[in-house]
Structures are given as structure tokens and as C-alpha cells.
Image (cartoon, rainbow, N blue to C red; front, top):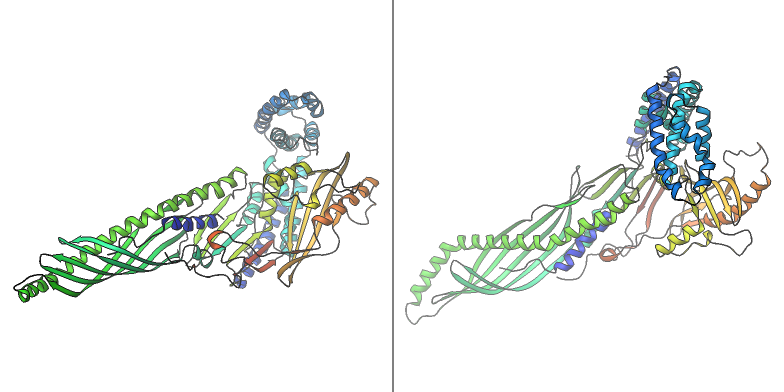
Length: 638
């Protein structure tokens, strides 16, 4: 029998580990679901309108708790300012005595003073995006909400907020557009802070809590990294029933990847299917027997992948042997016929036992070798998942709040939801993926917007920051973000808006990208906030899908409507500066290059984009297919 039916362990480890990097890396049904979402928005809008008279005054205990929360938030900020050379200036700017006074006021809190403090902490001054300032700002905002509800104009604010909620929900219901829900999240946050309308808040969040990230990878993409032929010739040297057997074994077959349907986690098998044909000679006493053995070999290692870890089950192996005597030699001067008859009878009597022994040894050998060769790959795959997927996402605060993987017999699917407690997710189902896609990404605009708000909201980003990041990532600094010899293109900085700093809004075959800045700096000059927007149409170019910009980049002050007023001189100057820069950032046309692949998958790629669609309910679907030369099985024989 063959000693080592599975060879090239180093290659096996690389191939299975590569999978870890990649894993690390019905229209009618949809219409019914979307119609249900529309009706649900109408119902909640009615509930919000009816809840206008349910304002609940805030109790003294809530105000005391908010004051205590502010006192706790002030401790790390106080320590920071004590170490800073500009600490005294910050204390003066923030009106530190007023902060400490309100923190100790509790039930006597003054809503007007708290709102003034909130405004100072929320200004676009550089440095206020530091965690110590942000924590104090959030504590002050919550305190102010409760103080307003207790003794300010909380009842009127509550009624106004519910009216705005109802209006936004009715607009979303009528239009089906995700962008119509833009005003909702900050209103919900204020309601939570003031402890009002918990039922309405829960209903709205529940209606907007569907997964907003769907990824699908076909088995056909990953299989070539594992699938390979097996063709080995090895010596045979064994002892069966006391007889030494020597010869050669020739094993042919293949190793392949097989996805296993599972709704709980991603499950796949690495399978060896092969046949070993052996030609052996065994001698016992005067008798030498030549045999031909045929053994069917099967081994599999089941691997499990979920949001936490990679695990593997023990190797399952089987072997089925059938042997045939092809010749017999008798080394004796006398009685050869008798010896042959006796030997023939004994061989026939022991054939089943000998084959059973051979099968058992083959199973044990295959089980040990397959487990030994796949275990390092499983360990490497586990490390890659932690170090390249889960770990970095957690460290950067980007790990989804909900994350689930499962497999069908043909696809690995990842379903996730990225939304913090105060953010909304999807309210509808994603578009259908093209059957030709080998990779499909269905991303709702809320996933993109939530991540960008979490990472950029209220942050100050300078040209030096971008230069440093490009250098750290070994990337070329985009020309559109660098300085220009033109006198108006000096070094720059932007203070992003706290809410929706950069957003993507989709409609039918349209994608709008908006950048919202609370403050801009060009050289030594500072400018007030501006919104910069560009709209792209999803089209088809000679090489595949293309995004074509419609019209000029739109630049205007926040909330500005054409015809309401004229821009000031400072706004006109800033718009001219920003127009030059962002005309380069938002190019006239964006051709989407094929997706390159690396390692053992390089022979399949690059993958041309096969599908690019946008929908008004916030969904964007992108799909890639195999290239004309892709999909080949590795030709290396191992």
C-alpha cells in the first residue's frame, strides 16, 4: 500500500491558508418586503404623531445622574488640560467655572448655560475632536436635554421633534428613498437622552435594523486554491500476517474543496479522493507471491468558520482494498505442486483478513498524515483571521455590531450590520445578485455612512495627515489632495461635520457623494462650513461598468437653497478654492478596473466587474465574474 498518498505539505498549508485570507478577505420577494417597510413607516409615523401629547417631565434623580456623569467626564479632561501648555486658554474658552458649576448643580441645572457650553464644545475648533473633549460634550448634551425637559421648553421641543419624525417617515414611505431618513437618527438620539417616547424610538430602530452588508463568494473562486491532482509513486514495505511485502504503489486522484450547507456557520471540507494501485511481492518460506492491490482512498477534514474563530474536526478516512494474485513462485526441489496447492488455499483463506488489515493500516496512515499536513494550515488560517480580519477591524472600531457567516453548497455568505446604538441600518432587502458573479457585494448606504460618521464625525483632517497615511501605507499621495503651485491651492485642513460628515446616497442608477465640512483652512485663511456634492450616473463603458459625473461639483453653505440669498464674499472665495480642488477629487468619469487576485488565485484573475447597480432604497450591488482566462485547475502534479 502507498505510504504517503497526500504529499507536498508545505503547498497544502499555503493553499488552505490562502483560503483564510479570502474568507478573511427574487425580485418579487423584494418588492413585497419593501412594500411592507413602506406600510410600517406609515404606521410608526402615525404613532409618532399621536405621541405628541405624551411628554414626561424629568425627575430629580435623572438630573442628579446627569450631573454625576458630567463630573466623571470632567476628570480626564481636567488632567489633560493640567498637562497641556494651552490648558489655561482652553479653560477660559470653555468657561471652566460654568462647567464645574453645572456639574455640581444637579436639580438646579440651568438649560441655557448648558446649551451655551454645548455650543462651545461643538464648535469646529481644532482639538475638540479629542476623546476627552468629546466625552464632556456628550455628557453636557445629555444633561442639557434633561434640564430642558425638566424646566425649559422641553415639551415644545418634544412635540416639534415628533412632528419632524413623522414627516421624515411619511416621506420615506412615499418615496422609498433611504436618504429621506437622514433627519431621523439625531432626533432619536435626543429623545433617548431626554428619556422621551421610548416606544416610538424602539419601533423606528426596529424597522431600520436589517443587515446592511451582504458578501457572497462562490466556491468556484476558492476551489482552485485547493483543488489539485495527486499522482505519486512510492515504495511499499510492510508486514501483513507475518509476511514481508515489498513493491511500489501508484496513487492517482485529487484533492478538492467542497462547501457544506450550514445555516449556523461557514463549513467546508478538504477532501482527498484517490486510488492506489500496488504491485508487490511477498515471500514466506519457499513461496513467493506477486500481487496487485487496488485501494480506494477517501479522507476529509471539516473546517468551521464563524465570527469568532476557525476550528477543524478530526480527519475522517476510509480505505477499501481488493487484491489479486498475479503470480506465484515455489523455491523448492520437491513437492512444488503440493506446496502450491497449500499456498493457494491459505492465500484464499486469509485474503479477507489480509485485505482488512491493509485497509486498517491505510486508514490510520491517511488519517494521521492528512491531519498532520492540514493542522499547520488550519492554525495559520486561524491566525490570519484574527490578525488580518477580526483583530484590525476591532482595533479600528469597524467590526460590525452583527456578523454572521454561513455556507450553501456553492457559496460562502457573510451577512453583517454596521450601526451603533444611535445609528440606523437597512430597512429593505438587497437587490438580487447576477448568476454569473463569482464575488458579490451588496452594501447599503447606511453601512458606509455609519462607518464614515464614526471615523470622521467632528474630526480635523489636514494635508499633513493624508501625506503621513499615504506614506505609512506605501501609497502615492493623490494629486488632488496635495498643494498646487497656484496661489489659491495652499496647504489645507478640514473639520468634518459631526453628523453625516461624508455620505453616499443612492437612487435608481445614481450615486451622490457629499462631503460636509464645518470649517475649512487654506494656508493661513479660515473659512466657514460648506457642503460639497457630486452625482454620478451608473453606466456601461467599453471595459465594463463606469461612473460618469453629472454636471459640476456642487458647493454651497449647509442648508443653502438657490434663490434664498446671495453668497458672502468669504463663501464665494471658498467655493472658488474648493471647486478647483474637488473638481480633481471627483473625476468626470471613474472606470472600474478588474479586481486583481494574488497567490494561487492569481491564475483566475483579474476579475472583470460584471454588475453594478444602485437603488433608491439605499442599496448598491457590485459583482465580479471570472475573466476569459480564469478558472483553470492547477497543472502541477504532486
